[in-house]
Length: 330
Image 1: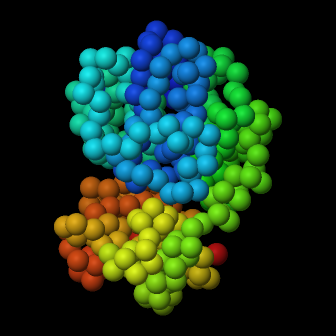
Image 2: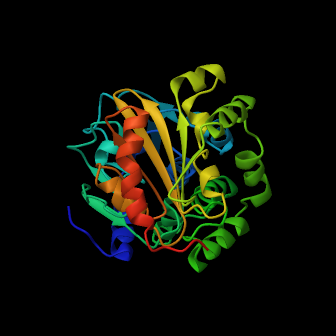
């Protein structure tokens, strides 16, 4: 369980795939576009090698992501298969800084950890960690250079969903030249940017829009307009006839406000409040999340506080105020 260079780790992952025959792939709870896109891309590559690969996640994911080729075959389950770990050559954890994020007892087991988050605990037999990667799906593209599998349109689409959603459709600070080069390769292989944008951004269920309206009505501003907060309660889910997946992306609306440096979404969950934070350049919310056992990126992170929403906000706001101190809104 040691850290290799990204290139050495990518080669080791490819070697493990080449030498094995049966694999499991999972990701974090409440999977997003990078989680599902990268998992399906890896599954597609493994299957093109004539091997077996199954994607299994703890929670369902948003309806737009069900349009990714192969998403209808993802297993949503409360437990790993009964024959894990003995029957598998590896279990890949995609975009999970800690193994607990999967929601499954993956250890002990032949875990291969593929991630690009700060604070990854390097819990795998192989740890393919690349902090410069724009998305984990793009890391799968890099790993495949050692396998030489021809990327078809379905695999390219899964990769592109991963890359586009994790870069905010090429708006966030992780939109590097490497992101554009990866996108070019995926598009050449058959990914359709217009179609993906339509699925993700303009095919939301009515319940999602109703839920957004309820959440926006809770908007509060702090620190002279530099911090925005939103709330998601269980009653909102009931009133909008929505699922928790319908709340994906709501936190970004606070970040859109001129002058706001950090937007925080407070979600009512069992035992307390789950917080999602989004920051503009110059602010590191990952450090804040890490102090509560959470994690993520400098500009996007989350954590859990075992208090009701109001108590969690009172705890968190002073920490965010310290983080934005001295930062000038663009």
